[in-house]
Length: 420
Image (tube, rainbow, N blue to C red; front, top):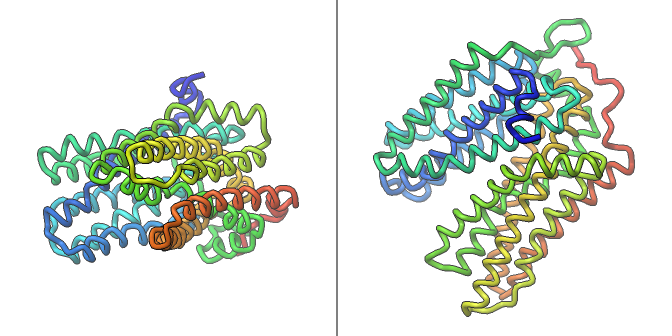
């Protein structure tokens, strides 16, 4: 069954959430890849100011996931989804029309917090709608997610020929349309209750999640997978720049498109194939292993500055991107399903919020470590060192999940009630 037929087999609300995520990523990626160039070239901001604006967006999203998830469970899923889209409408609109640093920081923070509001709510809502078909639903959802990432940059580039403001206006209009669409068509769903039947407070929700030891262990074990996934934006572009020099920018964009295309074309097929052959835990372990092994090909390329060495490195980087995308596609739906399973079906959005915050902190620390390791390797002519560490990270992540599963620690506690 194809992606479209599979999509139609889900309830209307689930289909709307999938289309919603495609539009969210389309609008986001038509603007964000070009924001740094606009800030530096169009507005003439210093490099530190550009980094500050971009960093505020990341921090406001990753750091506030934990609040966004709790609000979704507290007030229901629909409200934060609409609020996030409305807030991103305002944020993207501001980015195109303001030129002072304080206003740019406010706009950037708004776009980040918007993501923290709707991301946990969307995933919790989808899990509730999909029921026993959660793995399949998350696989199809990822196809729409990756398709938006794939199409966003070229659409943004086409609009950028006219003006950066046009990019911002179109992106803001998309989010405004999504706000209206969800207000009209998305049924209300979700909302936490305590043992007395009254809505649970946010602090009580956080305490319940922090008491869920299996979930916390799984969150920590999976940090490495997010560090590896982010290397499409860090280690792989750095290696491409070393290999190709001035031509690296186009090649880096091509690698990014290859990564998204693999997920769009192969996600549902890989999920069905993995479901038939492996248990959910087995799929996670094998997918994480593939992600780690993705960094072996660059490590095997002989050192050299000649054209053959550069071509071999480029081929190795393509192989790494494809393997990383395949491993991620195998892992993603089972990973999302495991978070729901470990929540015991309670406070799902809060669990997703915590999970995203932990992974975001891990990405930040992992990027710092990878960057520092890259500098050390450059200074000491140890080009294989970063690849070896990244491969080991993937294998360690797979080993940690395997150990948790074998020890029976990937099962939700029996009592998942929310304290009053």
